[in-house]
Amino acid sequence: MAWTTPTAVFFACVALLLAGMTLLQIVRPTFERKGFLPIPTTRGDRLFIALMLAAFVHLGFVYATELESFWLPLGLSAALGLIILRRG
Figure 1 (cartoon, rainbow, N blue to C red):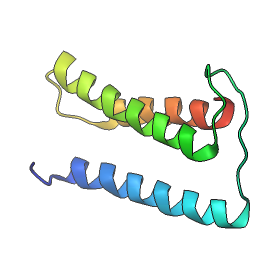
Figure 2 (figure 1 turned 180 degrees about the vertical axis):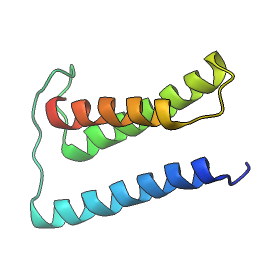
Figure 3 (figure 1 turned 180 degrees about the horizontal axis):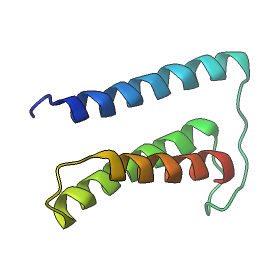
């Protein structure tokens, strides 16, 4: 895998998310809740689902287009991830 700037930014975002969620879990422990997802989830479950969705969005973008910009899938992944984390 080539470590290009977009790849480094993506993995840096994932690392920052994981560090932030760890600190948040220490300060405010989570509990299961039921949102629009069909299963009760914790904050960590929703983060995992959002990260998997981000990976699929990026892979689908690479498959469907020939553009080399990563801003569109990054923005779409961030928006969908926020929806899942807040309402999922």
